[in-house]
Length: 102
Image 1 (tube, one colour):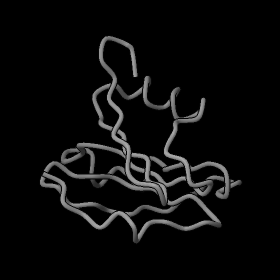
Image 2 (cartoon, helix red, strand yellow):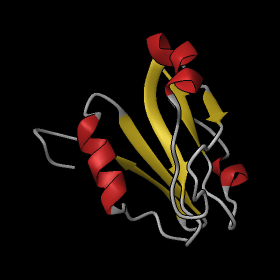
Image 3 (cartoon, one colour):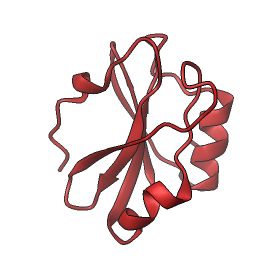
């Protein structure tokens, strides 16, 4: 069970990102995208220490929407084994891939 105050990750100037571990811990990782106000990128070396305990990825949206972008969709489909959370000031959305559909 993930019981977390996601509101602390709302930032209207850049997207924030991280992982959710199998034990429910939420870890923020650096957003290394060159345009962090519109996208996020988690580098392999930042996520590597958590691979054995990884349950989900999360990131925030600056525009107030938790609708997925085309980049989000492509990431989600490429990692069907992971849950995906999008955080916005309107709430938190959980996305899953089932038989190739998000």
